[in-house]
Image (cartoon, rainbow, N blue to C red; front, side, top):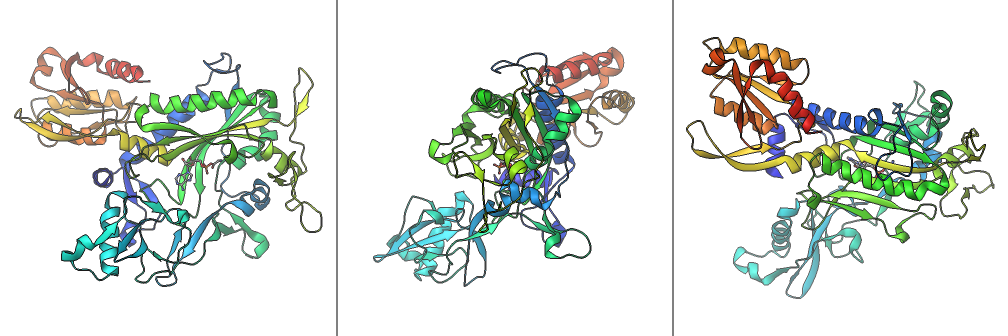
Length: 536
Ligand code: GAP
C-alpha cells in the first residue's frame, strides 16, 4: 500500500487536499492522471448503466426490458428532505473522546490488542496501519509498563486484533494518544451531515446540509421524471455526484473520505417483481467490476443476514474488495445493493415513516402529529395499461466512485521484470489498468529527436489526439519513457524509429505482454481503435 500511495503522489494520481498548508484530513485532490482515471470510471458507469442501455432488449438475467435515465441534482436541498429521509435523526456514528489527549475517535474503527505483563492485562489501541499494528501495540505496551528492550519477552501481545466496540468496557483501554488507562468517554452519537446556512441571516431555521448521498435527489424528483420523460415502470434513474460526510476518523487513503463521489441508481419496479429485480441488479453490478479488471478472488458479495435487514426489505448485499490496507481475510465495501421497499417515496409523500412499524406508519411526535412532515405530493404511480395505482418499490445499487478508483488502482499496481535498453532485466512498476480506465490510452515517441522522426511522431500524435487522451514524449532514453508510461498505466506505446521513414511503419508496444508489433503509419489510429474496442 505504501508503494501505491507514493506512486499516486509521485505520478499525479492523488494529492492530499491543501497539502502546502499541511493538508486537511479526509479530503483528496485528483492530479492530472487521477482525474482522467476517475472520469473514465464514471463515464464507464454512466455508459454501461444509463446512456448505453438498450431499453428494447431484455438483458441476460433481467425479468423484462426496462428503461434508464439520468439526473443531476443539487448538493444543497430543502432541509425537510433530510428529515423525511431519516438522515436528520439516524445518520450517525458512535464516537468516543479521550479526556487526556482531547482527541475524538470512531468507536468501531480504533483497533488494538490485549497485552499482559506480570498478570496485569490491558488493551492497547492504536491508529497505526494494519501491518504496523502488532509492533506498535508492543511498543506502546512496553512504554506503558516501563519495560526495557531486554525484558521484551515478559510482555505478551495477543494475536487477535479487535476494535473498541467489541470490548465489554473501556476501563482498561490505553487510548491511541494517551499515557494513562481509561481516558475514553462512553460512546456518543455524532451526526455525519455537514451543516451549512442558507442566506445572510443565518438563523437556526436557515440551517441545511450538504447531501450525504445522491439518492434523495432522485426520490424527490421521481414525479418530475415520470411526468416529463414518459418512462414506464420498471425504470431506473441514475446520478453521479459529490456527497459529504463528516467522518470521525477518515482513513485508509481515499477509502473513507469526507468529500467523495457516488454513482447511484434508484430502480423503480412493481412490488411483486422487486425480488427478481434485486437479484438482477446484485449480480449485474458484481459482474461490472470483474469486467473492468477487479479479480474475482479479491471480490466478495456479502449478503446481509435477515436479522440485519429492515422488515420491508427482501435483501441487501455489499460488494466488497480485499483492499491491501485491511487485515488478511477482511474486505471493504465498494457498493451496496439494497431493496428499499417503498420507504423513501412514502416518507417523502406522507411524512417520515417509522421503519420499525409493520406495516410502516408515519412516525409521530409527542403531540400525535407527524414528527417530520412529508411533501403531501402524490408520488404513487399509475400504470397506463392496467390502470393499477401503486407506490413503486426501489432497488438501489449505490457505488462510490472514489472507492472504486482506489480498488482499481490497488488491483493494477504490479511489479514485474522487463528488459532495459541494454537488454538487462530490471524491476518495473506497471499499473495494469483496463484500457477503458487508463488515464492515457497511448504514448507516441520519436526514437531520437532528429532525422525527421519527431515530425512523423507528431503527425501520429495529432491524429490519435482527435480520438483519445494520448501523450507525446521525445525526451530521454526510450526505455525510461516506456517505464514512465508503464507507471501511468498507458496500454500502448508507439515508437517512430529509423525504419519508419523508409518503410512507413512504427512499433506498437503492449504494456502487459511487452510485445512489439510493426504497424503501418496509416493504420495506427484504426489499430489503436480496434485494440481499445476489444477491451470493452
Ligand atoms: N444511498 C445509499 C448510500 O449512500 P452507503 O453504503 O452509505 O449507501 C454507498 O454509500 C457507497 O458510497 C459506499 O458503498 C461507498 O462506496 C461510498 N461511500 C460511502 N461513504 C464513503 C466515504 N466516507 N468515503 C468514500 N466513499 C464512501
